[in-house]
Amino acid sequence: MVKRGLLLLGIISVLLVYIKCGDVTPPNPPIPYLDGGQQETFELLTPQVTSITPTVASVGDEIRIYGNNFVDAETGWVELTFRGTFEYEDQNGNLIQEEVNVSVPVEYVSPNELKWNFGPYRIPFGPGDRLGKFEGVVFATNKSYVPDKYGYTERRQKEDTWIFIEFISNPSVIIKNFVPYGKTPEGDYWSASCRIIPERVINLLHYKLEVKTVGFEAKQFKYLLSSGIVINDQSSEDVFQDNREIVHDITGNYDVLGDLEKISFAEVPYGMMAYRTGILVTAIDHDNNPHSVFLKLTVRRPLEIRYDGNVQIAEIYDPVPVSGCIPGGVTGRQVHYSEMQSETRTRTFTVQWVHNWTTSYTESHTETYGEGGSEANRIGFSSTDETNWKWSVHGEVYGEGGVNLVAEGKAGFRLGGGHDWGGSHSFTRSGDTTWTYTYTYNEAYQASQSIIESEGESQMYSWTVSSSEAQALQIDAFIRPHKYGVFYRQTIRFIRIGKVFAYDLCGNWTEVGEMVLNDYTWSPDLAEGDECGETLPETELPPGQCIIPPCDGTYDN
Image (cartoon, rainbow, N blue to C red; front, side):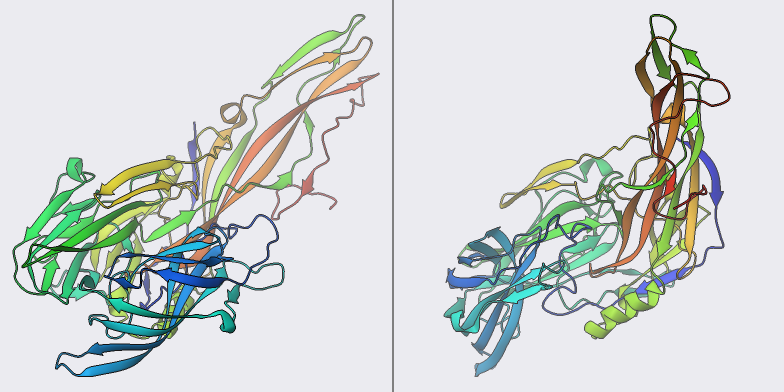
């Protein structure tokens, strides 16, 4: 059982964060494991695309890419680049040719196969909402999260192996816009400005989805909602019900989901880092033919901590005797040690924000993605008391969290029991009729982290735990005849390090700090000697040492 101890706090200040959203590709790849997914030295190979099929498709259709040397998803990701021209008719019927140089991330299947949902939410060539034909070359680029053994993080297909293709876009449903929006306390409406369709969304915010048909006119729009999507004041019991449908009988090529119905996403449950959901949009044409596109979404908190299960020994304390002299006698003696002495240590959380992270977070995104209002995409954090924070957008408060959630073992690092909990958490859900997925939460157990004091500063939160509560230490041993035994006990401090990530309203993430948990374990040992008086038998436990400072004790090294 974990007990609350002294909570060390400073003066809390309000911290507002904003970043701007970007164009064709996301500002950063899918969040990797903290070690980049690489346990051993590797070589990033040069990929090669040999064929693509089909080459006639609607937005959202699955395209297969074949070749060799594609990098796997744990090491990095693959980008597919199209270079050439796109020919289409404008709204006045004029034939237009535009140059194309577009790179899109694609999904790994095997070293010889990739897949890509065409678009995935608009026609990736030209203005995005015109049917036409692409002519040009296609090639692949392998990208890794960390440098390989030669220092490379990127390998592009050799130019003399690029393939030439013609690609025709069919009538489609496209996602014109999908952004969070709301109303300020003063009554003014606000909306995020994202140049890409976000696939990572923030829980509790209201969202608006704008769709458009290309190449046909619809008589009806249907929206099939996967679990986790909240409509108006929907009861919590219905939040995770699948296959709820909203139908709009509207003739034309444009519709909006979110004006009449307030669409939001349920809060990420404690103990889970995220959950996945989605919206299947289907437009029915006047010949009763359905045309669909599926919006895949991952719901997250605005701040989160990712922990990959790492455990590092930080300090080994000097062993101390915890028993008196125990004689072996004439025939020897069987002895048992079980928590003869209790030792109290303090577990601590230390939250260290990256120096000037508000400035770098803002400027790095703004510099790369210059369009979109800065006011539109910011999320603010402020403290409500000394352990909790509230997050808001334009003064409208949406949710709160804090270190108390971490302490109670609902999320983040688990404190209960003092054992190395480890393991994984699995979550499987069938979305709708066209998408079934399995999501394994073995990347981390995380919580929306709590207090922000000031740039570059730390906060520390402490709880006390006794050795008898943390672990049942015991050892059975035999003291040989005419020998003496003394039990020793050694304390070891180890640390777990989690990374703190922040999200903006467009789903872009940036690492903004780290969270360190100091924890303790103990080792018993029986030392044996010929005598036991002024000098006790020496233990074989190692001498104390400081491995990762700062340390409590004084050591030679």
